[in-house]
Image 1 (cartoon, rainbow over the protein chains, first blue to last red):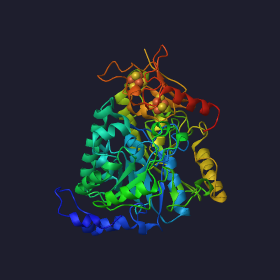
Image 2 (image 1 turned 90 degrees about the vertical axis):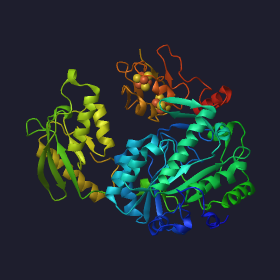
Image 3 (image 1 turned 180 degrees about the horizontal axis):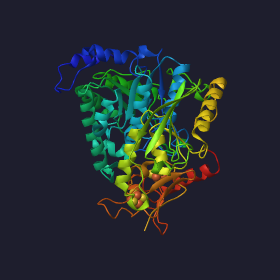
Image 4 (image 1 turned 135 degrees about the vertical axis):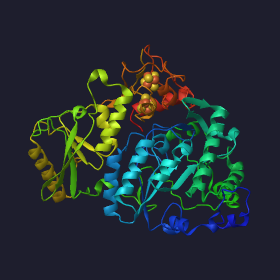
Amino acid sequence: MSRSASQSASQSACSASSPPPNMSAEQAALVEKHPCFSKGAHQFARMHLAVAPACNIQCNYCNRKFDCSNETRPGVSSSLLSPAAAVQRFAKVKQRIPETQVVGIAGPGDPLANPNATLATLKAVGQHDDEVHLCVSTNGLELEDQLPKLLEIGVKHLTITINCIDAAIGEQIYAWVYFNGRRLRGKHAAQTLIDRQLKGLKLAIEAGMLVKVNTVLIPGINDWHIAELAEELQRYGAFVHNVMPLISDPAHGTYFGLMGQRGPTDEELAQARSDAGVSMAQMTHCQQCRADAVGKLGEQVNVDEIPEVVPAELTVAVASRSGEYIDQHFGYAKSFDLFRVGKAGVEALAARDIEAYCRGQNECDEDEAQLRMSRALHTLEGVDVLLCSRIGLPPRQALQEAGISVNTELALKTTPEALEQIRQQLLEKSAQGSCAKECG
Amino acid sequence: MALRITRSCIGCNACKLVCPQKAVVRDAHGYAINAHRCDECVSQPNPPQCGEICPIECAIVDNEGRALNPLGSLTGIPCEQEQVIQLTELAGHV
Ligand code: SF4
Ligand code: SF4
């Protein structure tokens, strides 16, 4: 378990390689404050936001129906957050635990199989707090395609789970892989995944990301292959390697669990880490935390007990046909009146025009509707709450995914009445410091 | 001509993300396929996309109730054991 073993091989064949000892100052700073990347960073806290339910592969150590202890993943439906709710949750935790330096998205599925939710959440978190480190854990299948966007929003830490680089082994670990519109199986599936993982790994490292690789150690399947895998990772320039024991309790309902595949003993785990340690710095302080983990490593925090953060003010967009009442259907609104609602009062801002999102049933061609929706989203940038009389389900969801809460309950009140009501809610919330219902 | 989502669905949202017709909807009752929009993906080269990505056996069926992904076809877990899980699930042991 040598943390400096990778030094010996700095003359590696791969041009992408930049072994840890030659790290740039910038990279060193990235390591320093990340509890998962550096053992010394345990005073810093991390938070995982569970906004990504879909997955594009099936691993035999995972059962999508239940909480999974191998991957950092709670059950799919148990704790899912919308991006808007996720940012709220982050704000709340940050206020309570200011050491929260790291925000990650790790599931419950694969973050990059849910690119919109993942990117919207990270972007919003980054806007809320520009010092926080954003990270993503992925199986790597979609990494190549999503990498430019991840870089654009400032993601610098990446974890890729790579269990093997040999498709004959991969075929025993992955039941299927969904790629390019098809469910692939067998060796072909494994090869596709491995190729994409390595390509993504290479590009991410070239782009200056700090990449940790997770490997689930499965006795009899990939244990004898760990040294070879680590050597390859070192060639690519991965930063640290985290060999994690397979957890295969039959009660979790996984293929491995039910088929009697056992996890490694402590000795086998130590052996694998020392095998891998010949070429890759090993991470030994991993807690295998879940996709909704909060706080310092090894510490349990109940987010529901933390009072909600009440924003100082809200930007409210109003869809009004009469100019007096909240009486406009979102789809027909040509402009929105904008207001800033603070605890002290309401201030009118400049109205914003859009081309109406929907032009009536006949014309509502799908692609065009999508185009108008993106225009509407653009028009409503920076808005926290939208008031309108009615709105269809798809645009409501699209707005919520963009972090805008939609309120139709104040329909047919006058605009000043409605805004006053929102101001009262704001005051009430900050007085209580906590509120069971989400704003809007 | 349209597919349907059954009660086995765990709400992972994957089908909604890949459906080319935007036929998958989510409401308070869970996930469903809008029968007017779904064309069973005949308009495009690949098999029904929802069925290709759904991780749950028997969650998506055709209009005769046949599962696109029958028991045992996705996880590799032999049906018997799968059913034991479902039974314990029903009994609330999970
Ligand atoms: S069959 Fe195709 S069109 Fe129908 S719901 Fe599934 S993905 Fe959408
Ligand atoms: S992919 Fe399957 S399990 Fe996931 S939401 Fe769709 S039907 Fe439900």
